[in-house]
Image 1 (cartoon, helix red, strand yellow):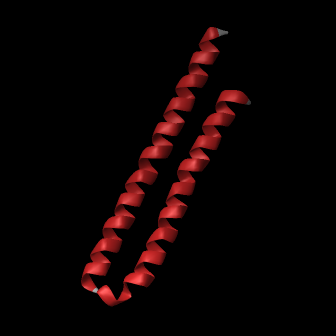
Image 2 (cartoon, rainbow, N blue to C red):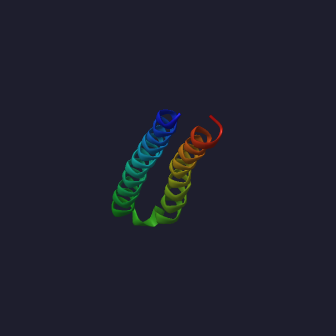
Image 3 (cartoon, rainbow, N blue to C red):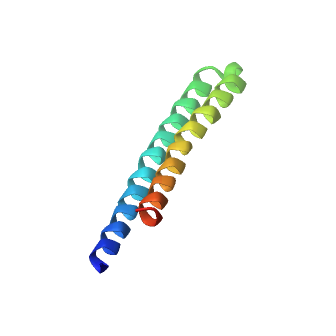
Length: 77
């Protein structure tokens, strides 16, 4: 029975680790692209900023889904 708990903990750890790393990389890419776009066209900064925040929110939602899946693995299985 202890082995099952250990496997659950490892599955939770891997789920949240992978689910946090890739959204962080995506947010970094979105921010980098937004800064480059504002550097090329400063007049459109308000539109670019809004779209960048919107994209970052969707990327962060993936991390929240990973957290939910990790909690389901830990408590429901």
